[in-house]
Image 1 (tube, rainbow, N blue to C red):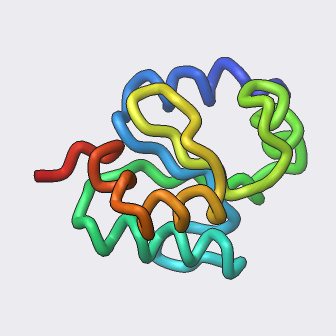
Image 2: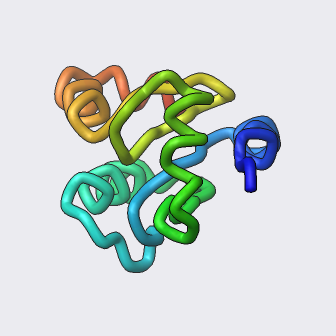
Image 3: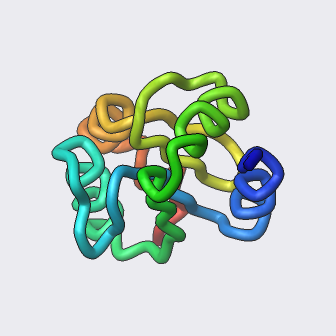
Length: 102
């Protein structure tokens, strides 16, 4: 099964998407949990996709995004990055602008 087209559609239909290990209600890795906490801190609505549901999801998303690790945060169709980048953007105040939260 090829998930690339499904992922493109999800990214196109949602302004903020977090491809993560687990769900926003139950993250299963610390990095995913960290990004969930950041997004919840800003109170934004976002789509979460559990990339552990099928073994082909991770390689297909990495091929689509060009990013090898997870989680992967997309905002308005653009890959922002993983947990380290999201944390850095949060710490320097840029994540607020990227998420477009007033």
